[in-house]
Each structure stands twice: as C-alpha cells, then as structure tokens.
Length: 490
Image (cartoon, rainbow, N blue to C red):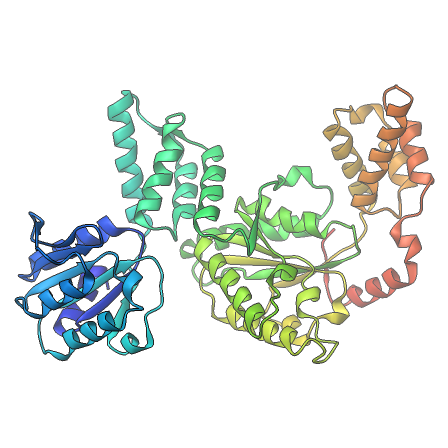
C-alpha cells in the first residue's frame, strides 16, 4: 500500500491526528496537497515563523503565530481541511497544547491534523489518539527514475551524456536503497556531477555518505580498506565457496529454489587471517563491509547494551545489501561465566538470535572467533550459519603467495627472492607473522642504508618464535576440535 492509499484509509477511519517522522517536509507537503485534491479537502499549514496559512496561496490567518491560538482557530474552522504542522513537536510539553489537541479529537469531524518532524516521542496523553505514519522509501524503480532525472539535468547543463556501465548503475541503485527520496537525489547528483560518469569510485563515495546519513558511525564501522581476492594468499576453499554463492545472494530472484546464504563463522589460529578472510567476503561480492564491535555496545544502564545491539542490527538492515563482520564474537556473547555480568551476555545472545531468525534483508554475517569453547551452543547449531570454516596456518603454496604479496606492497620485486626457501623457513608462521618478518627485515636494511635482501628476511624469520610454537598445546587442541567439525578455509 502506497502513502496516498494509507492516508485515504486514515481519512475514512476519521483518524484526526497523524504524526509523520521525516526530514522531507516539502516532499510530504506535496504528497498531502495531492491527497487533499483527490479527496476534496483544503491544506492549511502552520509553522513557528508563519503561523497558519490557508490554501494554495498560503493566505495568512491572523493571530495564529502561537500554537494554542492556531489550535483554537482550528476548533472553530470548517471540518474539511487538512492541517499540516511543521514545528508542533517543540511545544508538546505544554499541557494547554495537549489539551487542545485532545479536544480536537473529541469531535466526529473530517479534520486531519498532520505533524511533520524528525523522529520524536509523543507524550503519553497523545499516544492513544495519534497514528504514526512512516513514509515509504523509494524502491529500485523509483531510484532508477531519480538517477535518470539527475542525469538528464547534468546533460542539459553540460551538453554531454552521462556515461555509466550497467553494472555500476545496478550497484549504485542497490546501495541507494534504504534512503529517503531527497537523500537518493542528493547522492545521485554527487555521483554524476564530479565527472559526468557513474564509476566504482562513486559507489565508494555513496557508501561513505550513506553511512554518515544513517548515523551509524558510533555503532557500526565502515571498513574502507577491503582487498580484492588476488591480494589475499590462500583461503582457496573459502574463496570458491563465496564464488558459487555470490549470484544467489546478490540477485535471489534469478535463483528460484535456492535460499540466499546467511553467513559464515570463521574459527582459527590467532593471526592466521580471520579478519582478512572477513574482508575477503566483501571483496569477493563487491559489497560494503561494516564491523560490529561488541565492546562498543556495552552500556552501564540496564537494557542499554541490548538496545545498542538492536539499533546496530537494524541499521545493518537499512544499509543492506552489505556484509556485517562480528569480530571476536565470543567476547560479546560468551556464556561460560554464568550470570557474572548480570545476564547481559545472555540477553545480547537472545537479541542476536531473534534478529538472525527474523531478518529478510540481504545482510551476510561473517563472525570471527578465537575460542570456540566460549561460544554458546545455540549460536553454533545448524541453520544459524551456512558454514563454519577453520582458518589454519597457511600451507606452503599460500606462504609463497603471502610473501609475494607483501614484498610487492613494499615495491620489491618478488622474483628477486627465493620464495620457496622463505616459505620453508616460515613453515609454522601465520600470515600476520610473515608480514611482520618482512617489516622487521625492512628496519634492519634501512638501518644499514641498503636495500632489503633475502638474508634480511631469513634472519627475521629465524630470530623469533611464531605463536604456533609458543602456544603449541592450545593450537593443537583447537586443530583437533576443528578437524571433524569445520571446513578448512585453506
């Protein structure tokens, strides 16, 4: 049901007080004027600077600058008007205003009072008599129409046609979903006006602006440094798993009978690349990656932590399609301590499980964990995640690839190094430890004012002990648990 139909239904029900939470005052006013015209009504507006103004000519009504005077005037006015208040929410703490609004609802009339304002809470006295109407957000067809309108405006102004590939347009429309019409138009304009084209760079800019508009920065972190698949060594099984599921997640309508993938849990050795694997998902599917840090969600008041988690998850729904990375999930949901935290972890778990079961939006979860024993069994049962992958230390081929990648990042030619020898020396090293060995070798070479060489890297590898040796017993136990319960990511 569209917005006009919902308004007509409220009019038939003689609903006298309607609250619309939105920043789009002019768009909603235009909608109400169209609604009034179709239903033989008149529109009268009120604002704190102009008082009441009647009809399309906005003829001022004298002595109505104060909201109580405006409401008294409405009580004596014809009953076939729609009264639109722009600033009424600033005065709802006044008992006189509340009383007048209640008096207006006691008459069986055809009047409709519409309050337009950003999100606010009604006083208890008005909650029973008011209806909250959330304006619908533009769908993909409407977003495409807005994009065409802005492209036509740019072409008229510049004399050149906007260039864009079908894929970039599809991605832009996808990432503009969940925004208001005015925000969609603004971001379409930003995407086009810098160079007259819609490109991959515009998609990233749109994501940053959308993140800011959703006011999600405090709860979700937008990860901007998402690598391409070729920048990641190893993880071949995970990469293949992602490749064959990308199309179903991105466009489920063209994949009938196949449920869209929900998410994966990545368990593994510390430093082996779980965080990089999480980024691999977003890089593989060319989706924005948002990181949820449970540590930032915990509040000092009862119920505050669960509310923060609900808000973060609802924001993810709105930002969809996206990848939601829950880093070190055991730190937020561990239940092995009983109720030592006042039951917060258990309530957080219940909130997350409910959301996972009920969500319909394309939000793919990537949860990472170091300690599987701390996770509650409810989270691990079949159906919560599509798969549990174990990210182990890289094998020989992956280590060669990782050395090549990190040498190349430092503008060094991998072909000048014996990658086989380096991979052999680093047989027990994680990807993070390999990178740090190259960093340490770089410091040594810089101190001697000379280029980095093979012996520098070899010395850096052999002069320290990797985590797999320092914590051999714990890692052996983790591998033993994962061997028959998880799928290898490498």
